[in-house]
Amino acid sequence: MELLLPILLASAANAVSQVMLKKGMAGLLKDRRKARPVLRLLLAPQLWAGMVLFGVSLSLYLVSLRRLDIMVAFPAMGITYVFVAVLSRILLKESFNGWKAAGIIAILLGTLMVAAGGART
Image (tube, rainbow, N blue to C red):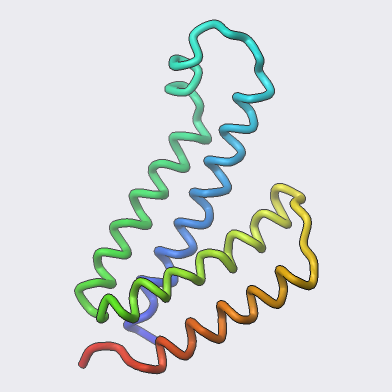
């Protein structure tokens, strides 16, 4: 589990970054003014937060690559979808149904199977 902690943190940071980017873009799209769209992008705090968290996620993923085979680390990032699904339902009020639940279960099972196949020794 100690070997997988950085990948779990990377996935969580990535998921939060995705939600922040979505919220930031939604805020910009509500504002239909044509004036200075690039400036509005540069000044959007949620977009900046999303980009910073994306960088944190990448940094944690790179730490994981030092400890895990890429064949374990890369599929393990699939857990990000689980975090995104939960956060998008709670924070963005996006829909959730049985198909999405089944997909999440499949992702979790697949990730566990790949992780069980082993961390580098």
